Length: 176
Image 1: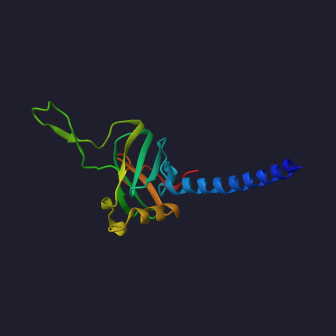
Image 2: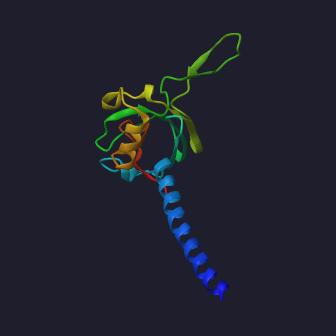
Image 3: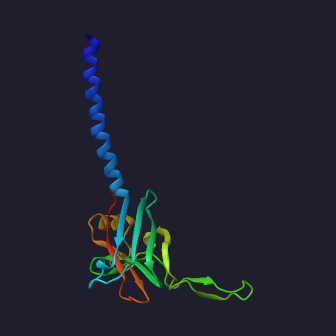
């Protein structure tokens, strides 16, 4: 008799726990993970290209954002930036002025790291900090950037030597 009363109570409490736990977990994931899928259709006017890219973002607890960019069928990348949907640049994801050692270390011969050669995999990864913001985002916090990312106002664009105004782009959306 007692067991027949305890079992429904345990089932009800278990259901309440599951209903309260999983939406919170899903909400937390939406708050910290974002993705942008880049294609030629994301450029205005659209670019006819086989190039694509995926940019993954993770908001870290220390007020930084980690990102990984994988690009495919693309060549001579010289710039990757985050900006608003109306093409206002706010943050560089690669340093177009970066250099790499190209000769023997004794001669210290450096050449520009960009434009790249053909890319079919990882392009770059890094960490975004608020001190890298410029334009209307200058002086703002990572939280401000995350708010813009959540609202769908932000995009990533990749520029190449062949398409200096942008070869592929796509909006940043919460990751599912």
